Length: 98
Image (spheres, rainbow, N blue to C red):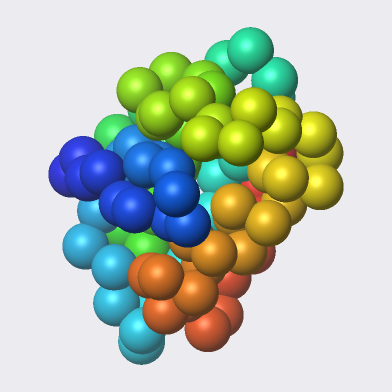
């Protein structure tokens, strides 16, 4: 499992991931409120998922990600950050897993 901090807008998102490849379908894991991407740690150990790119961010304000620069933690704000992350990682084919 790899770990990265990515700048998304005015915020930093901490992301757990494997090698991301445009040839593979990406599984984008989204944790619940008050949790972190660690809730999907077992996915990185499951050999059956080796054929996928795996991405498990800590939502802004959660885990190792930054607090929201604008103080907005609404559902809409979280969706905006996730879309910015998708664009930043250039994910074209992905499935959201919650």
